[in-house]
Length: 523
Ligand SMILES: Cc1cc2nc3c(=O)[nH]c(=O)nc-3n(C[C@H](O)[C@H](O)[C@H](O)COP(=O)(O)OP(=O)(O)OC[C@H]3O[C@@H](n4cnc5c(N)ncnc54)[C@H](O)[C@@H]3O)c2cc1C
Image 1 (cartoon, helix red, strand yellow):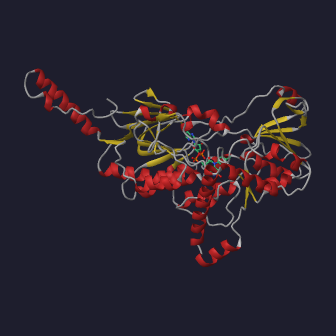
Image 2 (image 1 turned 90 degrees about the vertical axis):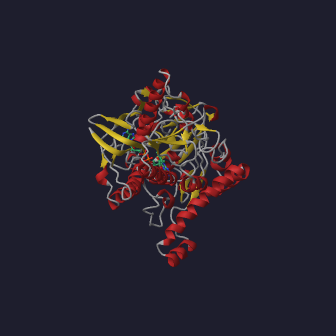
Image 3 (image 1 turned 90 degrees about the horizontal axis):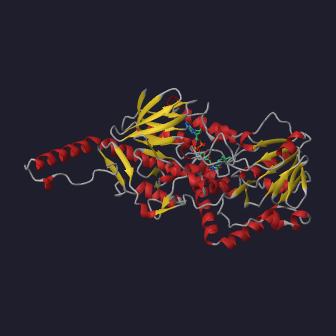
């Protein structure tokens, strides 16, 4: 058994950010901490996915850490470069000594009596005052893998099926026809890579997604001038430029959905760069989504790689419902068959809150879906648990950094004022059952598992950096919702209550003078 102040669960991007904050906080208040990571290496998403073209789709200027800014003009980069950047960050800030890999946390139990977490892993038990959950949001072992009739007919005739989450590098695609099922970020990333390799590619989508082309490198005249005159500070300017331009575009889409639809549609139309043929005739069917922009995460296409690939002779798009698989490939509802040798599922993720860890308070299980998120990071009524999640409409990192700054403030306050417990108290009447307000497939499928949100601040998960910045940086820690308690004081008051009651039974003393407040939600 090992006892520490803080345990971070997960050493992906969020876990690394948490370690950096803890490391700098420990120069003000001594802190012992460790990150437990179930995989053999750090980096989470960025060391896990291997499919061709795997990359970020929000700018590295905002996706990179504020404390270790991205210093390259190419800001949409391959996953391997992001993995390298995360490893360099860990080494630069001497964080590797705080990371234990191959350690999967299975259970966390909080004791109200001791004010400590007992963290169970396969080999060892840890005790900690605080837990920071940086486990991401999806199941690494189970992607979304919809079943279709006829799978056996397809595979027994030599067809191969693989999910993009478990890309098989050893599988040769030379002279093969590959059909990609899906229309999200993964599908539109894989497609241009395979088309460029000369593979015959079919994109099979039930319905299209909004795809917006953007340059992958800051190399226009304006950017060059910025770098020339501001030097390294130019990258900070790029960071804020990308942060705000992203938000303005999001607000434009939210407030003026019709105009946004038309402008994205027009851009896509001209990005196709063909004047006739199937894509022009069936443009609406293949490239016009049924929902409004940003009701689902928008897909970015660096340097217009998607639209310029889709029109190549070795690529075709099929929009329709899949009926079943057959010995030749994929049979669509209209009766046609898309001939296929290799079927790639780009059908998405399965949501998994808290990395599937069983969470109990004094042995009683609490499901994430039973909690409501305070300021997007603290599940209601669970003491000393901080959960790191990012934005859906902007870079994940932006909110994780804001949250960790806030957590640093909380830890300093609690140490200084000798508090043992912190927990937000939620009033049931304020519950609304929807955490994220997005209707992407994986969110709709897994929504019932996720924590909920309430009717107003601090119980809403804003997708708004400016608002969060204001609340997290300037907001008071004592907002009347977050409770801070000292266990010793709680016990002392309990003792005084018992003493006063006993004296009252004996007709001595005045019962009215006993401490009458309820000490905490735990009583
Ligand atoms: C394909 C893909 C592309 C993406 N692109 C972008 C993008 O461009 N921009 C953007 O903002 N966001 C993007 N995202 C979202 C992305 O997940 C986040 O940006 C970010 O990488 C999440 O970091 P994280 O550390 O919170 O989670 P993860 O990267 O998922 O890391 C979580 C870590 O916790 C570990 N873990 C989980 N459970 C346990 C446990 N029980 N015990 C111990 N360890 C555990 C995991 O092994 C993992 O290493 C993308 C996501 C995917 C899947």
